Amino acid sequence: MFLGGLTSIFGSIIACSQNDIKRIVAFSTTSQLGYMFFACGFSSYHIALFHLLNHGFFKALLFLCAGTVIFLISHEQDLRCYGSILNFSPFLYSAFLVGNLALIGFPFLSGFYSKEIIIEAAFANYHINSYFIY
Image 1: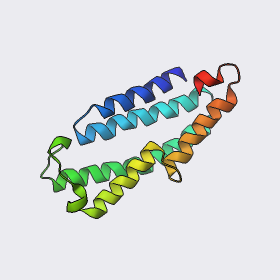
Image 2: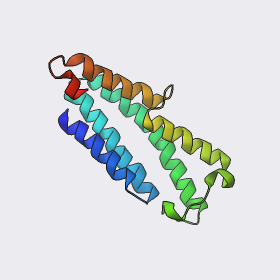
Image 3: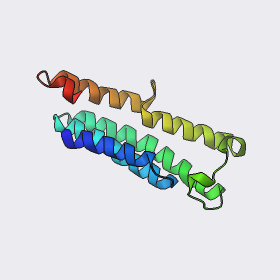
């Protein structure tokens, strides 16, 4: 559990410091794998599998959107060179927004339900040090 939690935090922090769009999506995948290992740490393999399946769908959306953005901006991967995608392609912007909201666990999207179950199970399974794990 400890390594899964550290992996989740580490992947999130590293993703925030990147400028390459594909690296950001890849390091956020590392963060989500940390959640899965965290769930496996307290033997909730079914919850980890549920998060894996949810993660696969919204991460596929994010990688497809990232590839489309890279193609539309003349194969440029550096975020600092991008302008407003909303004005250029509103549908792509909307799809990217939904994928990012699912990634962060926004309520009523798939990432919210799978992450909430992981955190709730961590709180329910450990009574002695449950606040530390939670």
